[in-house]
Structures are given as C-alpha cells and as structure tokens.
Image: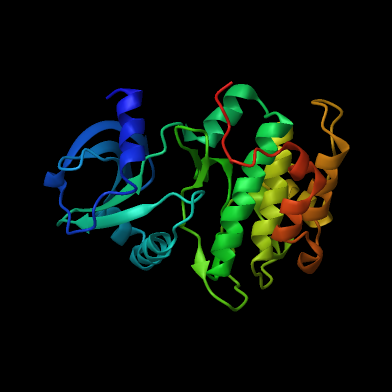
Length: 290
C-alpha cells in the first residue's frame, strides 16, 4: 500500500462506518507491534478501503490475569473520546478466542522510537508535542478522565507527525480522588509513589517529566534502582545537565510542573500560555520528519 493511498483514504473518510464487525471484514497486513496480551496488525476494511490498526487480544490471557474489568473500562473510555490528539477506537468485535479492537492507524508509530533514534528532540518539536498532549489531557479531564500512564511508548505519531495518546489501560473516569498506584515508575507523581490519594494533577506532573525527557533524552529522576528513583521523586531531586543545551524558559516550565504539592503545579491552561510553548510550539500541532 503506497503512502499516498493511505493518506488519500485518511482524507476521504473520517472513520470506518459503524456497524457489527468480524474478522471477515478486514484484509490483515503486516504486524505493527506486540504487547503482553496480543498483537497489533495493519488492516484494511474491505468495503471502504479504510486503513486501520487491528489490536488482537487473547481472551485466555485477559482471564488469566483477571483483566476483563480493566479492558472493558479502557474500551469504554477510549470509545467515548474524540480529539485530534487521542487515538480513536472505532469499534470492536470478538469471537471465542479473541477480542479485536479497531483503532486509528498512526503511520509513524511510537514517539518512543523517534526519541531513541535521535537521543533528544529540538525545543520546537518538544514544545509542539507538549502543547498537543496538554490539549488532549485538557479534553480528557473535562470528561473526568485521568490518564495516569502518559509515557513515550503510549504516544503515537500519525503521517503528518501529529501526536496521539494511544493507551488508556490505566485510565479512570472519576470525579473523586483515587488511591490505586499505577503507571510506570519514572513517570509517577510523588503522591502516587507514596500511595496517597491523587487526582488530575498526576497527569500535569507527567507532562513535566516528559518535557524533560524530550529535551534531555532521559526521564529526570532515572536512577540505578527502583528504590533510588523513588527517593529522587520524593525529594524532587531535579538537575539540569549542561548538555544538551536547553533554554531557560523550558527549564522554567519543567520546574513549575515537577512540584511536590499537586495543587501548586502549573494548570493545563497555564502550560498552553507559557512563554516557551507560545514561542516554540507549532500551532497546527504537526512535526515534519527531519
């Protein structure tokens, strides 16, 4: 399938038509990735020629790890979200052995891969991604969804380089504070590390961690052992290395997000208005391939 063909399909149709699906409706292409519970394939809906990603999850695995409730919640949350920076879940179907999720196809794959390839990102690229993420999270928070696991592996890029939040496995829809410790250690806010109640502000913290990682190549509290990472998060042991060279405004934004008291972290609205974002972010939210 040529690039122009896939882009052409993207433009022609906003999403595949809603109806009852089965495996017979799709031509299955190359594998795009595999996770603990299944695999993701490139696929084309036969009638409309619409290109999607098909996530195939094995029921046996879900039952073994008792994840049915979590998967159902993840699907309900993602189905309800419709934002340019959130990967769409168009629908799903199942047979005796598998559950198949029909997802928007992100042509350029994981942001994590790009970060590993380049080591770190330019300020313009980093600011564009942080602005896109902030807008997506503001939309989620309006709908009472806390993501709780934003990290480069869960962020995908479409063919124009637009960022998409892809994984809602740890998300929760709730107006009250939560107590479950979840997510990935390097990105956890102090209140989660300490098992205290947490709210939307855990996502704001993660934006600070990601902003740092985009610019420096590693998360800010990375350490040899989990215990040391814990300790560095608790102390807010934040250091800015001299290389790569990063602007004062970027460091200011990071410092205002990585604050122990969750009520004092910069709000999502204030992130969008921050001088570093205003100066560097692409208003269209796209990053060309360099």
